[in-house]
Length: 50
Image (cartoon, rainbow, N blue to C red):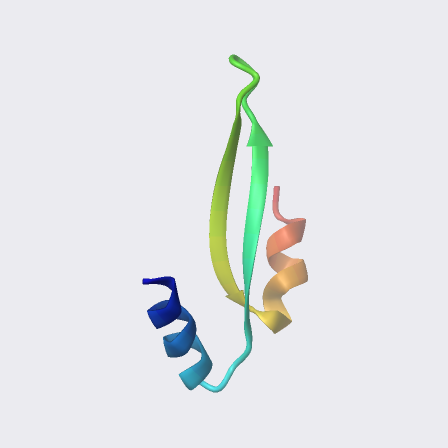
């Protein structure tokens, strides 16, 4: 399925990046991950959000 997503994103004409962020839970200490696909020109904008 991931190959279909990548092929679809490349056909759009813009270059995209997959961002994986890690967050530690205050209660349990476990880590959770969130993934997002954003255009290359908005990477810093997304990473600066907290």
